[in-house]
Image (cartoon, rainbow, N blue to C red; front, side, top):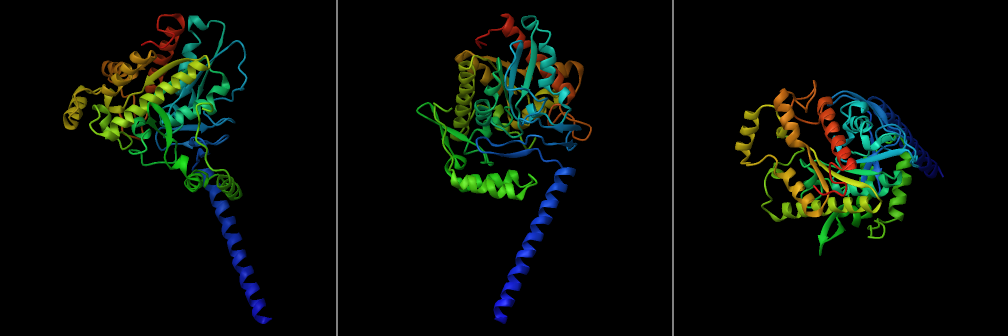
Length: 393
């Protein structure tokens, strides 16, 4: 009897210790979220997404108060139902589009919204540009975002912002190291889901823990874990449909199978975004974003970089997407050549902040302003007939 009492006391002590540890962990998570805001959460379709209602002050690159709306994207809350007098644009993209380095009203999405309000073809309409950008996304995740989120808002136009600096790698199950995301491969010309995110419930469970560990609720983590184990992932069907982050391979034609496949899959994903946008009666515009080195105002610095890397044309990736647009009949806006011209003429840096190296990293407010103006001008031209409305480049 004495032995049982001692065992029960030890068990109670151990359980008490576990409970106290969990409470301490919960408190630590809440404190961390307050002082070092975390904007992400697990997404069963895209791998991760922005956490609805998250907010905080971001100053690791740039300087901005960031708030995520109730539906999980930057910008003001928007009703799902689109009023009859409203023209909506869905912006799909990665961290350039998410743009937490600058206040929301300085992002290229907000700039484009203001600029489009003056488009003659939209006279009398309210313009709304919805920013669905999420840090780290590749084109496959942007396709998922279109299907699962953006189309619910009935956009009149879809803009796919392609960051060629790493989107090609992001789309390759071979080249991309972060596999908490959907991947596709081409099988007889058709996009087929591949990778552990589609194939393994336990891997998805690990991804969930990775992104939700700071969601300030350990009980939610346990509940989500049980849901993932009980409901294995389902593959989508046609019916349900010198910067570390940049790969220098993009500036040259692919020389090995992995990079050729990555480009082929990227091309197919872009076409799929176009097809599904058009199916839902939305105009489509592909926009290739720049990299910092492409738009350095110093021509000598650009030339030195090209020489060291053995690059003949800094705009090779942009020209690749332009050729795809001509072949497939959709509009492409290559920002890099125009932004390089502007930066050189005005000798300004469009990338970088006071707390980061100038000329590199994400766009600063001036970079966003120029990009937003150029995107709005191209969309307006498409609407007025000065640019092709059906997407021909």
